[in-house]
Length: 66
Image (tube, rainbow, N blue to C red; front, side, top):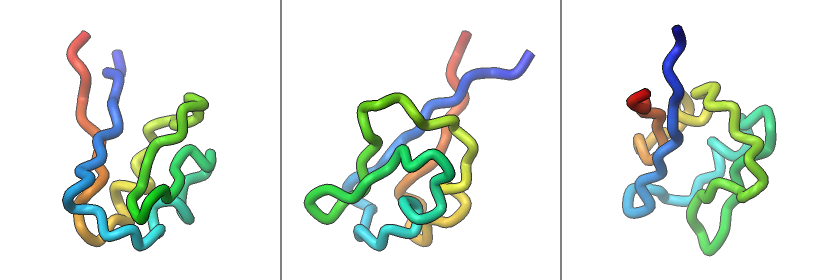
């Protein structure tokens, strides 16, 4: 069984470069006030592309407990 994942954004580490926003296949991320934010529309599929591209490790996925 595949575990669920949750996207975590470390606001203090985010420089607002927008790389994660550009690589998100579902456009689930946006820049707001110079920082990345997850949109409220539930489009994130926890694919990890944002995590792989973030140069500051400000966005990542964690496994959720069932």
